[in-house]
Image (cartoon, rainbow, N blue to C red; front, side):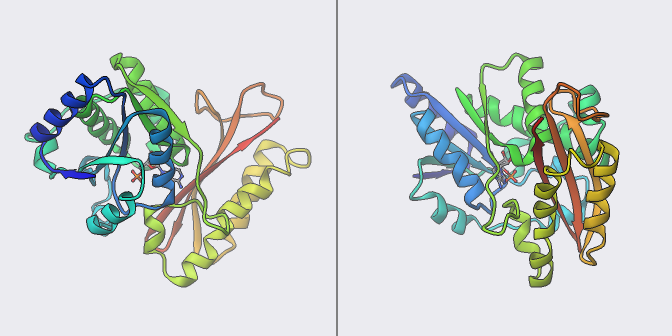
Length: 281
Ligand code: AMP
């Protein structure tokens, strides 16, 4: 497994692999890796011949400077974690390699970016689209792997690929959870023991909510989830929405024939946690 910092070196290696006829798989990450990331790498290993993982904390997707500064970074630990996996190359560029000049591109994702993460983190998805389109251009993968943990991000990436007609297949991968149910996240390591213990209430409440659809209507269930979480002194819900999985518009009625997903963002001290769960009819 190689660690490459420069685009030119990466391109040379990858064009060689392409000439050998290998299918290139790509997993973009911001590092501070955990088993959620590793599950994407293993899936890429099953579906492609040569797996590239990028580790790059992208400044343009952070609307909160403090969040960017606090974001955990440990390259050596990431390298050690990836060594026994299907990953064959780590791309770990500096910011000026990705952005030799400021990226001024403005993407328009319409309604998709006006709700939930888009609404509460203005500019976040524009930054995500900037970095992922740039990374796709550099790596030119056949398939790229994204986690459903970031459910709205996955929809944004699909829309970007459709709009720009990029020749890459996007493969969604399921959420990986800790033993107690908390969705794995690089940010979990920022939680103190009390916060960590109480944060389990997020996934536990979502899971319980899926059993309450005969008892409560959509609006009642939304309130039930928010109240249950906010009663905990460590947690403060930023939003909980039950939306149509394709349009991301709020679901009004359990009888709506669409696929429904409940998406939540919760502030736990200074750390912001997100999770989601599917509501089956
Ligand atoms: P990040 O490093 O947070 O930008 O995440 C990189 C990729 O890993 C994204 O596609 C995430 O959706 C995915 N990912 C992060 N956490 C998880 C998880 N718990 N389960 C599955 N995928 C995840």
